[in-house]
Length: 337
Image (cartoon, helix red, strand yellow):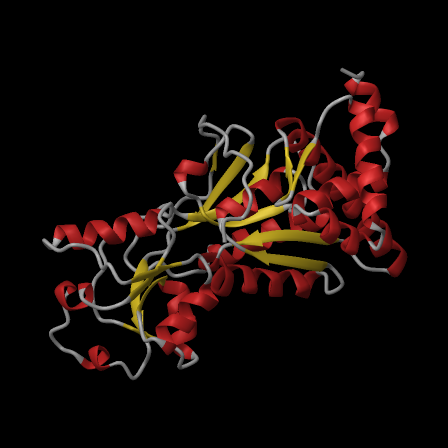
């Protein structure tokens, strides 16, 4: 095996790192070559060059494409981290040169976007209008790996306890209850005797199986002596939820703050049915030990100020506090969606 420290410090070039990430993204030599605007033989030659440096096989080639080996997964993770730092430094230098005030990249779950993140960004823009905010929507399975390699500075969303890890700092901001929604002209919107039995027989669009809100929803049906709905679509995307609620039509299960926002736009209607469940609070996650840019610190301060003004109905508000639970780390996984 080669001297790994020497390879990582001296031999690998930026073009090598870009190729490794492209191969991991596309899992195909031809598509990676097209993305990098080089020929496929050039991609094969460069990959062989990198593998000779390490004296290791990093990708397995087959008729179905390319798959990273265990060594390849580790090297790709390193490549993503270096490229993220490179991009952040480049953007900061460009911002200074252009008279702007920095850049922050934030990953956001739907639960945190309309009521929290949008208002916090508006507050940030009042303080520093030239600060650039890049928002990427997704769920924990997709966004936490990107936070870990430095492609995101901050995550905002529901603090699912199963994804807590010693390498992450979490800060709870407020409690966000759930509610049931339908399209405004659905017949059950006007049903004065609406109950869980009627809802169990309808099509639903629900959160993914890993989400605590999904688990609690199924428990509500069991509590009423019913089996959970079987005609379901699973998604963490608000746009998918909204589309199925309006077009199918299906029953949706959304955070109350999100539902209120889109009810005010006439797109949804919140059903008058109590959903007495407790869920993890909405909050922020950052990578422990990584220095934060001034723009990240400013956005976090705006998120705290915004959260303090969000009504939480009858639910108690979570006290803003840092938690450092010792849980197993989330495995690095590809986006399942």
